[in-house]
Amino acid sequence: MSKRTHDQVEATEMEAGPSTGISLTPSTNGVNTPDHANVGLLQIPQKRFYRQRAHANVFVDHELDYPKSPSAMDWSFHYPQYFSYPDQAEPLPGQNIKKVEWADVGCGFGGLLMALAPMFPDTLMLGMEIRTSVTKYVTDRIAATRQSQSLLPSESSEKKPGEYQNVSVIRANAMKHITNFFDKGQLSKIFFLFPDPHFKNRKQKARIITPGLLAEYAYVLRPGGILYTVTDVKDLHDWMAHHLNNHPLFIPIPNLDLEDDPILEAARTSTEEGKKVERNKGDKWVACFRRAENPE
Image (tube, rainbow, N blue to C red; front, top):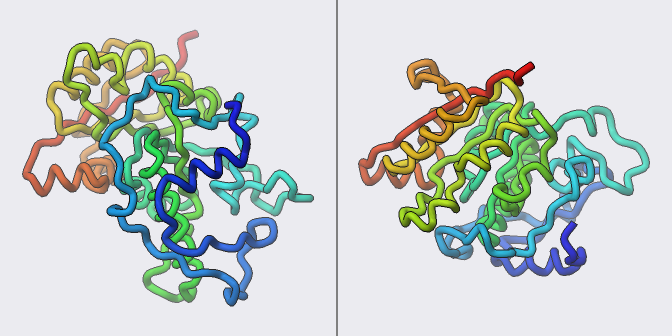
């Protein structure tokens, strides 16, 4: 673990951006109660209150908080319906069974997560974002959406499957610590959508896809799992596809094979960056790869 105390971590998170409402009062053992009298109503956050530079230096020590190993990670804060709290006497039925299966690396403002969560309500998915304010925005967005869903009547047409309890975000540097969060072969899908292109030659070592990092991604991605890349920069697309094609554990998937894949469609169109490219009538370059079976 990092050397920061729990209070220091909380203080840093509070500095990330303004609160968009009163925090939900945690219910006992993560169970929602019908009495909402003491629950403050959260508002969907506004991005203008969470301004931050578009990219971050991944080599700078950001005093990130991360577990020593995946088994040491407490997921109850992120998925209270699926994991018991450390001080909880007994786990509720269905708790501590699931694991995170999908990871959106550099999730930005969480567009993909919010699009996929109701489409696949039984799949736990996590956004990993290094920027403090952006992570705070997604955290507030998920909290407000969960609350609004919980207050809707069961027959409401606006009520979504799973009520977004299967989605969360964490501030992390996946280039350094992805194996601290996920076991070998834990993930079935991993997304790299519109990453920083790092145009200058001396900066290319900071790209999210490099030969060394592919070994890390292959470790956490199970055989048969899919790695998605989408970018509007042709040079970066060629770079990522080149290194993935040269790695023995990644097999290219023809784009036609995923033509009707709703997940790829969401990856192309639901992120804020993807929507911006569409407004500007720009091109998007897609490359998807399947994790090969482990060699004998």
